[in-house]
Figure 1 (cartoon, one colour):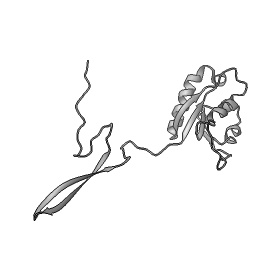
Figure 2 (spheres, one colour; figure 1 turned 135 degrees about the vertical axis):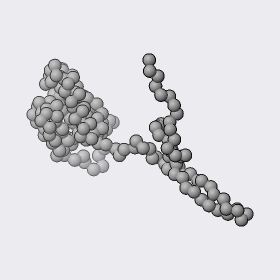
Figure 3 (cartoon, helix red, strand yellow; figure 1 turned 135 degrees about the horizontal axis):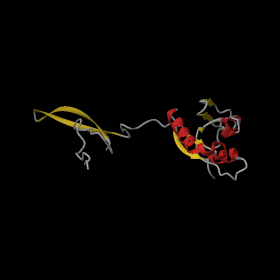
Figure 4 (tube, one colour; figure 1 turned 180 degrees about the vertical axis):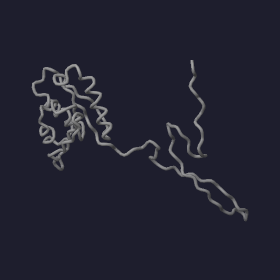
Length: 168
């Protein structure tokens, strides 16, 4: 059995070490002053708030839609492809939604759930998952992304100003 290397992280400098979890980063400055006529050098560090090497700007969120009645036995592969496609496009992938088989209108069901999740896009494997009607998603205020063929349909409705979406 190979034991993992459990050495403490290597120091890059006196004030910053990698890897994390990271304490607040410190910015070091050197100051020189005279005290009783003798030059003194002191190293002063200031905390740099909310800065981490892994901090990234907020990504837009996306949710996947995989209908088992459309994908059939390929639904596990389609779900993986949908998630991979969303990540490739730069979305923060939230969840794969699989509407129950006994739902009559799975698109309305999906839109009702997605409305409270603050997502910008719905990702599907192909247009069959939205009954070949991308306008149903775009008119509700969401972008639609398809894996095969790769395509983007932009939202046609913007959220109304002053009206917040979310659960009551």
